[in-house]
Image (tube, rainbow, N blue to C red; front, side, top):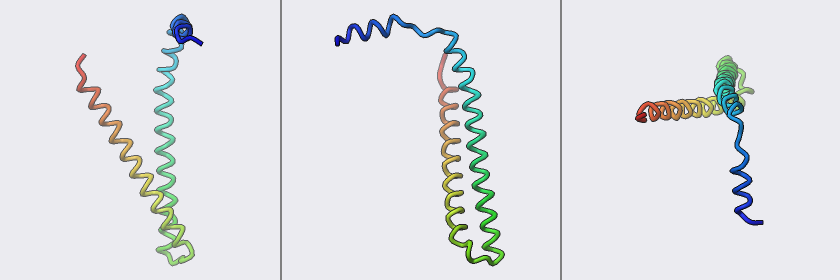
Length: 100
């Protein structure tokens, strides 16, 4: 198969512009929804870890291992969330620095 035929067939089929605008407009809401969902999951992990820590503080020594795992998981989830936030802010600042 010759590469010229592949390139010419790819060039001859342009994408409709209406689908691009639909994708970009729904893409922003999809990102917002994904961000909200992720933050809700991180919050749920934090709440579960707090509940297990309260059990350990109340004297339930059987939940100690579960509490330690949940607290570490919550810590990692929060660290990841902070890093994602930092990258989003960095990307926004980079966009603001671009000259038009």
